[in-house]
Image (cartoon, rainbow, N blue to C red):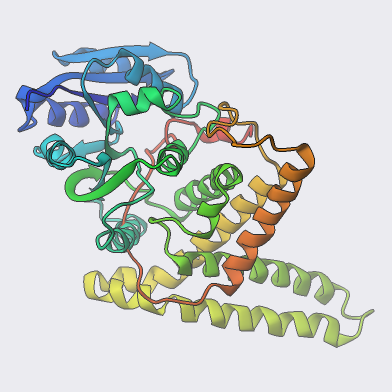
Length: 400
């Protein structure tokens, strides 16, 4: 089949990594089908643009700082290929990456999008943990014929499908915008699949603080996306159900710990059972959380024993960050750029919308606490660059 491929890469403050990404794309095994490589700079103040322009065969577009969603949409609008592959500037695709993504979608009569995988060469414990975390998720995806979640660090879509669905990404979402796009497309009956051989090497979060900040923002923007697709708050093809239990336990643990410290400070004036009872609840919640980590620790032990020993505290950091971020997102919803992207069959009153939003939030937290534990989840990884979180600086994200 005579098919043309466009590759779109958003970039922000990527001078330290963009060269390796572009060089790998220029050396792809599927080069005869790659019509163009488009890098869209998202207002970088370093040498990202100058470095990218030094590579022959790379089209460099520049926009003010609007976010990764806007950068990808600019790439989609300028692309001429039948198929668009997406990756990030801090990723180095394997030399058969484009071929591994495109061949399955060309052979299928149904699939309109594919999701690939991460690897990393990093040595830090946190980065190695993140890799196993994503491998755990990939194990969850492997048995599925179709999926409803695609990350754009390693992804492909038919261009006409993106153009037919509001032109691509919701530019009101400044982090994990690929989640909303995948949910939206899946909700309209399109089929997507997982291709584990489409591999990119990535720079994962390599410290507790970077990991916490990334998960905090994921939690916040997940809450915004779940407002639009509440059924995905209950289940999607990417998120292990045990993660929701861990989020609930960590949220309750933090609340009980704060209560214990508060009442403990007033212990001389209050009956001991008021703070002693909360202290016992905190201990029980922590024990319950540790029990949920056993399957992951066992899996990590077979891959990397040092990571296995660090897994419980890192999973606690993840649970706390995601639950706090999600709570932040529920309490402070943001306006999304796309208004009602999925047409309603009947008008929805403001009252009904309010009831639906309240029910969705309550339902999610009930799910977090009551979903039966299933010890079979599996992953690999997804992460941001040194100075930015998915094309947004920490300072900008704090303005939300």
